Length: 352
Length: 126
Image (cartoon, rainbow over all chains, first blue to last red; front, side):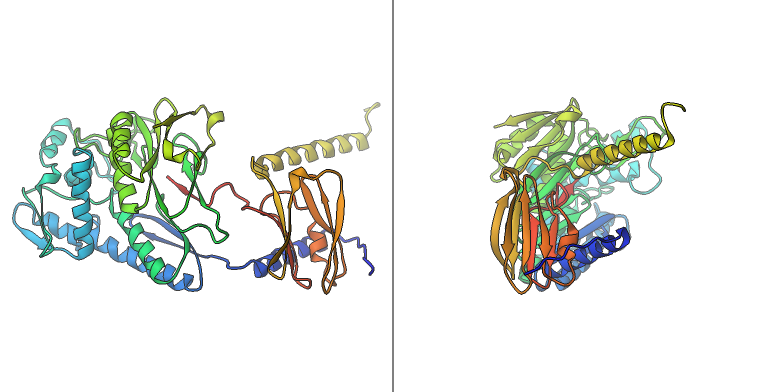
């Protein structure tokens, strides 16, 4: 056998490299189907493996759009919009999805002692987040609207799928839980199509189905709340988990340029953006709706109460970042969490 | 301009540029902290796995097949040194050093890759 040595020009080398890459793509088994779309006021991206990946990804995207149409309060005609309009006047019939989400929201209201409260709707509206007309409301306006916030005023009739709000002026906003539910619905669709490996990202809510096709866990970066987009305080390895973060850095208003910032997660106790000492709360759980509701709850509750809530639940882990750059990690993440912010001044503390 | 000639300056500039490029590539493509395992597959079957960080010296071995390939391994890197195939794509790929790097020979049905993805994460929560 003889080997030929060759001397090639740079352009030819580059061309061959390109060909090598193309060949690599052909040879690698099971390239994922990747799809992106804009729904629920955010970007959705999917990476799906398997024979029906294309079909499943399309169906997931359609389903998320449908759920948005049912639950949004920013576009007219949704089921939740009708519920709000009928506040204090009667009940409305909901679809099974909206009903389930509302029922689950009430459960997390109880669990969090009212820190998670979807009846914060009137306040969200008056702050005007995401409307382009955001402003800081007057204190007495906040006080007046605060009296309308109480998840215990949500009336539910499970048999008839009827829901109502006890008092006029009350309004539900599912912004802290609907994306989470969409994640669970997506997992159901993937499974129905026989998909064993997929990663879905709904505006930062990550849902990892199974492991990666090579059997290794998905590596999910947790955004550094004070760093550039795409820089992480740590990376968590997950299989069949939802990973959801609530933070003060992602969506906020800044009434005066360079002035005080007001983030969008309102504390139902004060009517102002939550100021619990946490700047980011990441929850890792089996279900995405649970992770979504809990990340908001814990972000509002703060470190001590939040940790207590997490520790009272089975199979729920958390990464909590405080204002003074301490990162608290629950014990169950010992093996799967890798810190990556030491050089940026973060200090890591294991809890429980 | 008596001591330094134009050529010297050019050379110095070139060296500085290369140094910059190398340090930048380390930053961007840094090897991270996990091992680099080279996996050699032929027709879908794993032929051999090599922990590149534990290699000492230089080793070469032949991958048999329709178009035999000569594989060379050194500490932290692996390449197809020579190949009997007509296209030479795998040879031209050069040294593989980073996770996610791969050299493919379609005619011989082989893939040599360093395990792992190029980026540090698969997705991100925010």
